[in-house]
Image 1 (cartoon, rainbow, N blue to C red):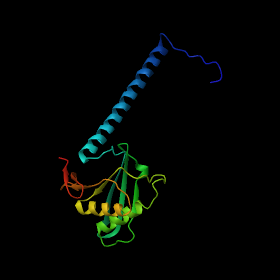
Image 2 (image 1 turned 60 degrees about the vertical axis):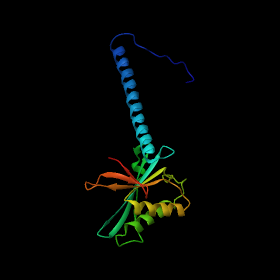
Image 3 (image 1 turned 180 degrees about the vertical axis):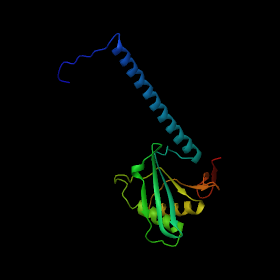
Length: 179
């Protein structure tokens, strides 16, 4: 500090009780934080194992195309980093070239535009895993586009049940049940 510092550590009384409580609170907070981090790592490790990935997916991007009766088509991208939703890195793409409800063409435009950004740009790092809302056709189209661009990232489709819950993942050829 550049000057003499003295620390006071109370041995009895109210100040002793306050410092003891503050120390215990700090310890509990650290344990809670560590447990939360372990839980996220366990989730990512189990996901990597389930999907047969060689590395933990530190950054996961998920895409979903939507439109209103074939018009006003858009594609949303959400991002998980270190197992936590990174809301500042979410992106929305208004689809410019498709206006007939063709989800595959809209998804292709979105992916091309997303990967036209340099991976060094802020917020545009390449993901370790891509999840697409859709089945085999969507996965094949995305894999085709990114491979054509010279990018190799694991891509899986999320197949929903009648309650719109993801029941199965697909790599374009095989299905992995989540039930």
